[in-house]
Image (cartoon, rainbow, N blue to C red; front, side):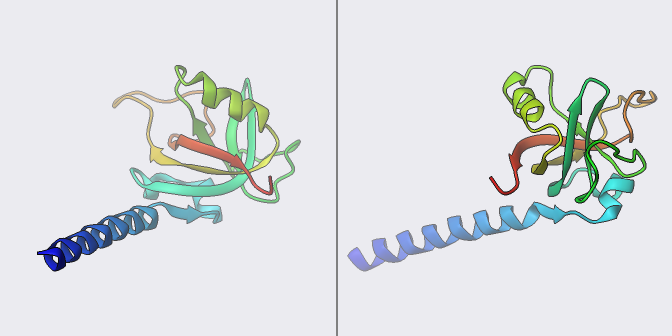
Length: 136
């Protein structure tokens, strides 16, 4: 009986570990130029992306690694989408303005069907789950 319980416990732990490994694999690390020029092919995917964060009134975007934060090019940007109700995440983004960061989230199209998005560098962006500064 103890052997069966032990075997079931090991099986359950293995399945849980396997599931978490697959969840980690689903979040793709992206820092290629393609994610900054057109993220539409990644629509709906969970990703982790490195870049330079700009979080100002008119510029709430992520730019490729190596971008001069004072002169970002809008041709290479990924809109950073944080819900208005998530003031804690907005404060984190504000504190990390002009920093090299890692952003984890999902690529989404925030514009309702049949409408056009204005004021964003691209029509799709990353809905933020977490933002962390690279290198402490």
